[in-house]
Image (tube, rainbow, N blue to C red):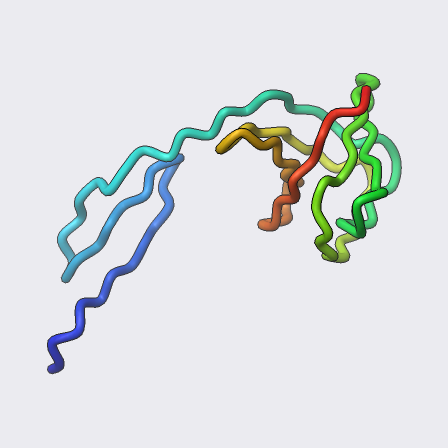
Length: 105
């Protein structure tokens, strides 16, 4: 057995838990400031470029604010806007990736 420390992070209901040789200890609370939850109107084709606009069924419009490409097809997916470190992020249900966005309407 080597002297390496094996650290594994496990997410359980907004908590990061540090497992160190089978002993669970709370590392920190993950605070997810959810600004808005809703449904994206129509087809969602993924994250493309800085000109991609995401329109929610309640009328909100958000524009992608970073160059990130990730293809994912969904019709009327559930989405949420969260705020972290002074930036807004769009998260789609069923997709682990998020993208930085800014509100345009």
